[in-house]
Image (cartoon, rainbow, N blue to C red):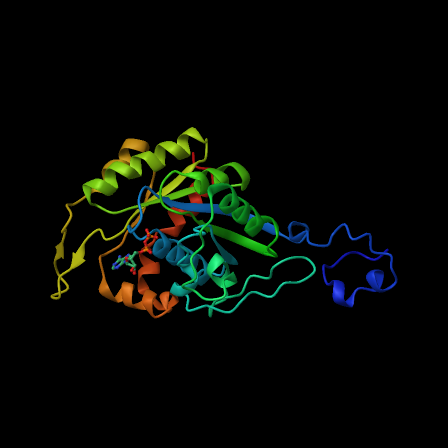
Length: 278
Ligand code: ADP
């Protein structure tokens, strides 16, 4: 019997009735994902999806093969950031993740819905099932990094991801407001309890650049993520400005054009992932 390539439509074994069918629908047979990194936040609106997208863009620019699994099933925003809306093709092996303009593989509930404003009104166990399918039934192929955009908080979906996906670790996104600082500790402590390595922290909306280009304003206070980084011994992977152009690029589906990806210290993150968060 010849080796299975996953391309059932052109397979002699299938035509001659010799395929056992064991491989069909098992995308995982074809998947070799070296690193799976989840991106989480204590609360919504701190820019977790934006940071997930920027991390993927930063790694992709360095020549890595990158994918994003949008695990925010009820509030998916990754496809919009990349200007993607076409339904993914389905093969005998599973769903083929569409690629962004620069080649990032993306799967999201929003790509599977009849229209992007269709709500997903599902209970926790069904949502968890969908996340597992995105991992097991999507043909990711060979990837260096798969980023998982978690829904905010410490509920069912983050728990499913931490329990079922082979995570190398998590990146925690926060912003400098006191409320975000309080809830980010919950996210950090959840990862610790689940024994998932904490790879880095990103502070979004950290400061504003003055139009003179020489001064920074700290509308929500300065250096807050640094304190959490010290308290939990997690490297600070970046501080991103509050920048209307970042928001507009996201709204226009052009997040890949944002220079903000260059502000993320992905070498720090890679080192930490290499040592498994230690
Ligand atoms: P979350 O995933 O945490 O809910 P999003 O990434 O969806 O947050 O961001 C929420 C909103 O804030 C979006 O409209 C996004 O464009 C905007 N936003 C995120 N980060 C920034 C930033 N650094 N500067 C300006 N707007 C931002």
